[in-house]
Image (cartoon, rainbow, N blue to C red):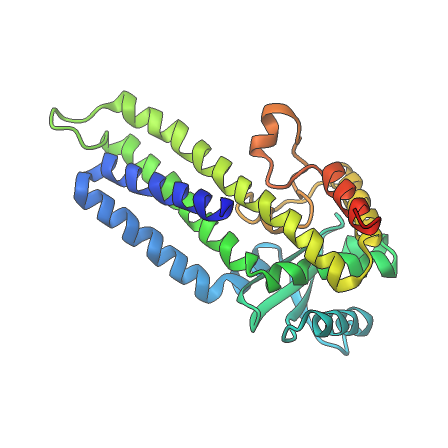
Length: 275
């Protein structure tokens, strides 16, 4: 319910920004623009995201242990076999993408394969399979597209001054340029944080090792702060821990695409203890 409310908030921002730019006609065009963007992302999100992370799909012959691990865990989860990919980043991380379980991909970085143990890797992959099982990858794509539409409309408003019978209001347009994208980002990241908690729980059920996932998250969090990853902020929420290593305390927590790792670990430890 929280996620649906947040998506409704993003849609309302699109409508409001469109109305500001061009009245009723602008509102209609804004919704159409967001809809077309969502449709394109729906069709090609897996290819787009893999390309943005510079990831390469691998076969069982090229990465036998990783491929067989994904195959084993996806059978436990009751999912079709996703594509398996490796991104050439030193930072240890992982993500899932795709519009549906039948058109999905699980990607790990080269740094992850070098850092974690076999059990921890299982926990990480199970978490990503949980995102696919929960259809979070499609949800994240829609949220990112709507947030992007708001940002574009804000720039249009700055140049054209917005709809105003007296010729436009540059100050109001500037306000939309500043506030609109910030509000969209806050809502987008809030959606991402809600889904991360659920993926942790479902991933722990798939692997049967919540403490292994907890241990992996702690390692990923520590190394993400030491090893930067150059990736677009638009796809940062897909990663298992924040690849941009932003802070997550106080007001800054609103602008974090992931919940605090310490809180995620505490929930996993409580799950392992049966609480």
